[in-house]
Each structure stands twice: as C-alpha cells, then as structure tokens.
Image (cartoon, rainbow, N blue to C red; front, side, top):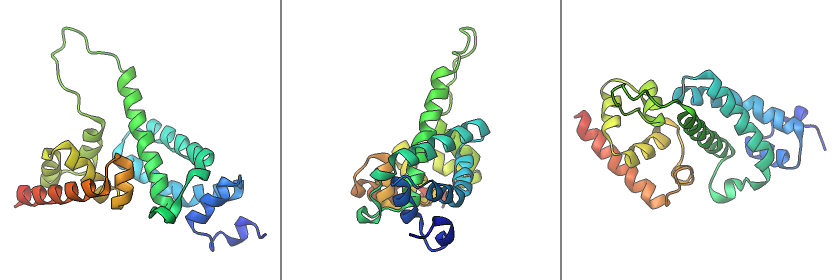
Length: 186
C-alpha cells in the first residue's frame, strides 16, 4: 500500500476519513491540513472569540479521530466535509452553552435585559444591513434552517441531521423562510 503522503492529491476527504477510522495518522494529518483552514473561517463567522474557535477546532478533530468509524458517507447522501461541519457546529453550540452556564449572573441592581442567543450574536457578526434585519425577524425555526443551508452551505440532508428534523420539514421551512425574506426585502 502506498503512503497517504504520496497519494494525498488522489484521495478525497471521504477516503481520508475511512483511513482515519483505521487509525492512519498520516491520513488524519492530511484531512486536518485540507479542512482546518475553511473550518476555522466558518467558525469565526459564527464566533468572534478566538479561544472558543480554537477549543471547538480541537474538540472537533478529536471527535473525528475517535468517531471516524461511524461516518456513513455518500451511502447516506452525506459528505465528509458536511459531516465535519456538523460535528463542529454542534461543538460550537456546546461551547456557547458552557459559556452561558459559567457566566456570572448580573447584579440584582442592574436592569434586567435579555442577552442575545449565541446564534443571534453569530448572525449579527455575519450578516448586516437590511438582509440581517430581515433574517433576525424570521421565526427561530425558519432562521435556523436558512442559516444552515445558505450561510453554512449545508444540503437538505445535512441540515436535517444538524437540526434533528425530517428532510421534508427542512424543505418546507426553507421555502417559508425564503418567502418571508422576499416579503421583508421587497
């Protein structure tokens, strides 16, 4: 068998994940080399805190190393890149939840204000102007689908897995979100 380094240009990400499942460190290094730059960019679009981005990257690739054998691949209509992003997106949500859980409560004398959700913070940093305003006015369930499919570039199936929804529901919500966005921007 030839080494991964010699054939790295010939192997796609799915094959690399399959080699990682067998414990191939060179394949893991190549997968990291190929995917970590865009992963970091996508995470930074959703989170401005570099420490959280670094933590999520580390947790994501640790999960990939440990769970590569669970990757189903194109047999289920998914892609290795979509699988990686799904893991990263879930780790980012977990990081936001941990941060919110460990945050100190405001003093009793301070006026009560609703803190924006992690997704709202990420959305504000990603999309601005009229489009951002229209997107923020969408119902949360419609916004989540639109974010996953448009901003993150996930397929219907990948969005379905990420959000834990049936594919038909994802399609319906995406259509409703687009209609509402058109109305808001008209």
